[in-house]
Length: 370
Ligand SMILES: Cc1ncc(COP(=O)(O)O)c(C=O)c1O
Image (tube, rainbow, N blue to C red; front, side, top):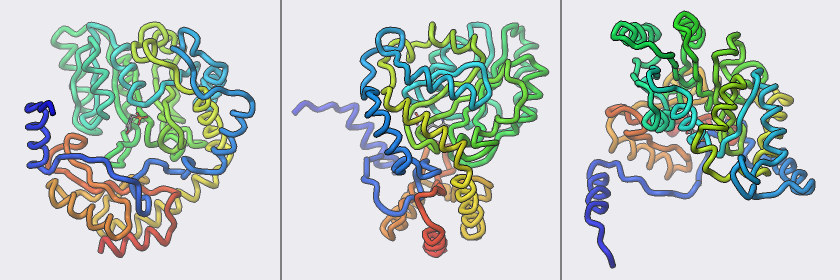
C-alpha cells in the first residue's frame, strides 16, 4: 500500500492535540442539528417533494444555470424569495458555503475594503481569500472597531468602496449582531452591508424573514439565507439589489462553473418558505422551547443568548470532547466544537434547540448537565 507520510503525520498530530475528527452516525435526542423548525423530515416537506415529482420536476438539473441547467423551478423560487425577503432579486446556490464564497470573492473589487466580524463563518473567509479587496477583521460585534478600520484605511489612502460583513445570529455563540448600528455606519460610510442570516432565517424576524426584515436600506443591503438550517432543505438564497445578482450570474465562478442545484430542491425550498410564512405556530412553539431551555439550561452552564443556539463554553479541547461523549452515551446528541471552528481556548458544547426534541427532552438534558 502507498504511504503518504505528510498526510499521516498531520492526522497523527491532530490526534495528539485532541483535534482529530471522524464521522459518526446520528443517534440520540437532537441537540445538535440546525433543523430548528423540524422541517427536514416533516410530512409537509415530503408532500411538497412528492407533488413536485408528480408535476414532472426533475431530480437532476443536467448542467450549469447558464447552460441547460436553468429550470423554471429555480426561477420560480428566486422570484418568490425576492418578494418574501423584500428585495429586488435573489439567486439560488447549491450551498451556503458556495454562496458566501461567491459573494466575497466576486463583489468587492480591487481597491475596495472588506471589514468583517472576527467571528465570521469559514465560507466568508474562503471568499475573501479568493477576492481582490483588502480585508480586515473587526472585534466581534464592536461597531466602533468597524468604524476605526474604515477610518484607518481611508487615512492610509484607501479610495474604493467599503463592504461590511457580519452574521445576524452567530452560529457558534448564538448572539446577535448590532444590525441597526451597523446599518447606520454603513450609511455614513456609503458602504454595502452583507448579512449572513444562516441561523436567523425562519426563526427570527417578521414572518421568519430573519433579523434584517426591518432594515430599511435595501439598495445597499445583501442578505444570505441558507436553506439547510431552519428551512430543512439545502442550498442558499442570496437576496440583493438586481445589479448584484446580475453581476454574480456573470462573474461568480462557483455559480458559473457548477451544475445547478436540483430543481426538486428548489421546489422543496419554495414549499419551506411558504410553511415558514404561513405557519407561525411552528416558530411560536420553537420560541417556547427556547424559553424553557433558557430557564433550565442557563443555571447549568449554558450561555444566556436569547436564541436557539446556547453554547456551554468549557475551554480546553479534551474535557469538552469528554463531556460531549458522556452526554452522548446518555442518549443526547450533543457535539463538542473545537478550533479552528472557534477561537483557541473556547472549546464548547454547542446546544441547539429545535422542534425535533420535546420539552421533556430539554428537562432530561438539564438533569444530565447537572
Ligand atoms: C453562518 C453560516 N454561514 C454559512 C454556512 C454555510 O451554509 P451551508 O451549510 O448551506 O453550506 C453555515 C453553515 O454552517 C453557517 O453557519
